[in-house]
Image 1 (cartoon, rainbow, N blue to C red):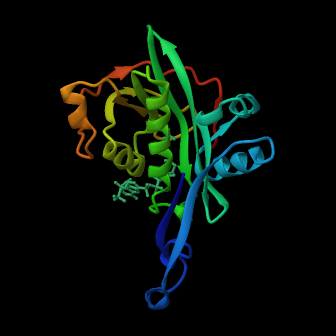
Image 2: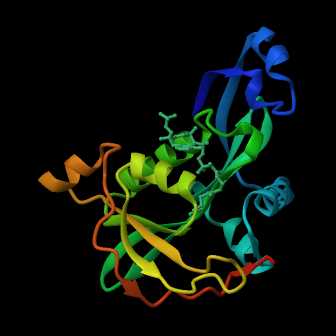
Length: 213
Ligand code: ACO
């Protein structure tokens, strides 16, 4: 999928003076998704190191090579600037898609790349056909990510206490977006979904991530 968006140079050089920036013209940029391969795996590692405060181990990356549509790189004018990595979990007879990472390099945010990746995830679920919901963890102070996911109908389901071993705050919200077709779910697909039913639950296994101090 390829999208063309208008990008003001403000997004790519935050250090410029306001006067200079207002004189610059708006540029057209192409944003698109591409497959993860052996050849660009290193780019994903570098990107994740830049974007996330946790480090992912070699097994995490090795498994991604077989993930197909569950892992995509996001390109802005042919440069890797974002990535989404998911897995499908089967628990309690429920098939759910878990977003392990979804991130964009700082300079390339608010251009629609996050949306492009999340829309891809929704399409994967639609194609699979029998996914109950999409879920993920977000550090409790990550207001940007919370706004982003709430726009797409995700709701806070619970708080995973001390989810991150070496981050402060260490708690994470568990966010979920049901994909079951019910009247109430159709309403939550709007960006106005609100926080609900926050309660304490144990965190999920953390075998693939290491918090970075
Ligand atoms: N403040 C408030 N809302 C925001 C912001 C912001 N800074 N940025 C995005 N949003 C919301 C808005 O509702 C926006 O819609 P709008 O443009 O109509 O206002 C919507 O998100 C979509 O914005 P995009 O441009 O598509 O999002 P972007 O490409 O900037 O990516 C992301 C959003 C992924 C959260 C990005 O900020 C990022 O990479 N953050 C660091 C990594 C991270 O925190 N990832 C999520 C962690 S959880 C996980 O990975 C499972």
